Length: 236
Ligand code: FPP
Picture 1 (cartoon, rainbow, N blue to C red):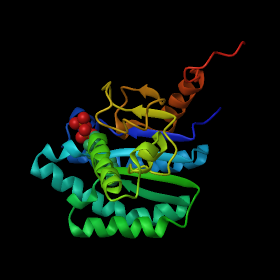
Picture 2: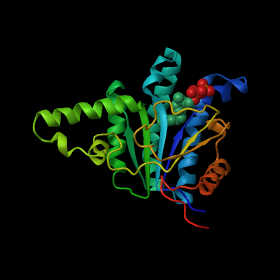
Picture 3: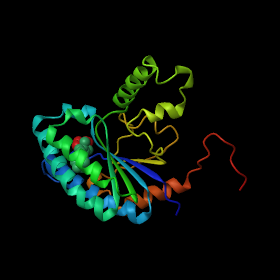
């Protein structure tokens, strides 16, 4: 099996999964969080080098105060625990998104985790938190415009690579495969620039139930695709 170099996942369906079990949404988030740990182990075992997950979008702040509080508590615990997970999986962790919206202690935990895990290179694990692609592009283009007006960059020298270098994902390869769990068929403002050529896999399985077998199914489907990027298909 040819494994993709970079897998991006939209973690969706925690709330519906919990509701179907007669449980509160927070139970779904706890299970979703636990599944994130397992899927990192699976990615590493399968030899996937880059994993990027969409855990909290710029739009998710519209949820109830109660749910936001649960999520922030989960992020706090997870970011702490992730130091151990990073060591176990030799995993370099990077947060994508505008972290300035989080409480100071969460921001500090993010910086600590990124610094500690920067020594590892076997699995590159990106977590998108307070992330939205349009917000990322807006922030990046503001910095780029500033570099132009202050003479560090010439507009005529701007290439696609220049634009990529101003995004939160600077230096990362583009995703090869994007998986969205729980039945919705949209991108929800996720990695819009980076996924120009990415293969998409949508499944009805909710995130807390998305385990290794489901991941393998997605990779098998990816293997069946003809990835020629607009070129001519080779003769069989
Ligand atoms: C998607 O389900 C989940 C979220 C938007 C919440 C965040 C993700 C987790 C808790 C996973 C763990 C992540 C980290 C970084 C600790 P949903 O609530 O949108 O489900 P629904 O569509 O069924 O309502």
